[in-house]
Image 1: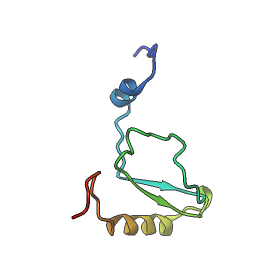
Image 2: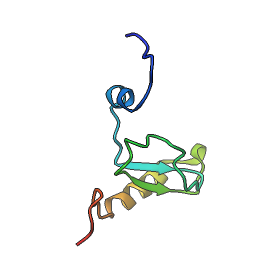
Image 3: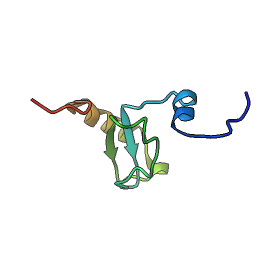
Image 4: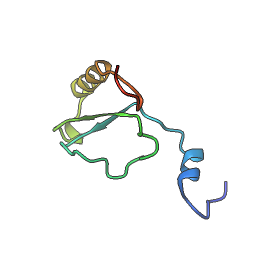
Length: 79
């Protein structure tokens, strides 16, 4: 496969098949740093003070429990 001459939204959409439902942000950072902006437009964000090297199975389970309890509206208004 040849390298693209221009990398933009269309290139990323076609070459990067990723649309997470949950974005886990470690180290207490309350920003996404332009990370996968198009793909995470409807993702739920979970922030933890735990830094990445210490992120473990218990932290993952906490994130998943929080995610499971959320009312996902995908951009719509709640009734």
